[in-house]
Length: 211
Image 1 (cartoon, rainbow, N blue to C red):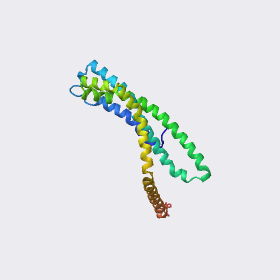
Image 2: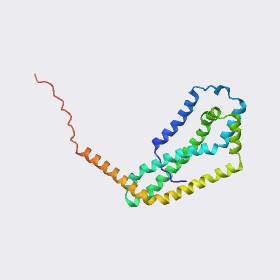
Image 3: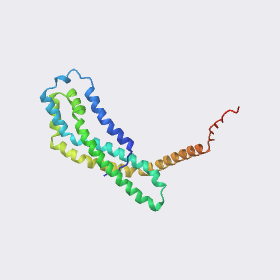
Image 4: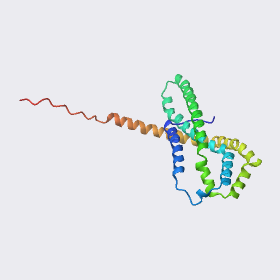
């Protein structure tokens, strides 16, 4: 699995956003030709969605991965404050937990993405493509050339990503270190300002009036 780091808040946003997309698609005002979609066209759209299922699922995997990435980034500061002899073990435990989250979240999101395909991507295909265009698209999607390209796409993207990281690491790492230092200084300054601020004393309750 590629580098995985994430935030639970983002995971909730993702999980909540998908049902929202579904509801929006269901309540959207129908277009002029939406009610006249033939059974033959619906079948063509269904086949296109089936041919593109791996792409739909990859969107869900990417969302889960982005969320996982943010969580790992958020734990970096806490890990750096641990004693050196405890840090590696704790980091390993956290990676295990994040990996489990990623696997669970990506499975849930993949299932939901496939369920939402007909009401989102499918609706767009019905509205924007003619029957003949869908047939042409389906012929391409099911062609051996396209299947070969899709099989190689992940490998090609990984190769580009690895090369990009290797070529830019020396330029990016100093910028990242400077950013971390700047953030650390701002946080320290804010903490010191909060500690030195005068604390307002609560007014003393007055006793009963003397007669």
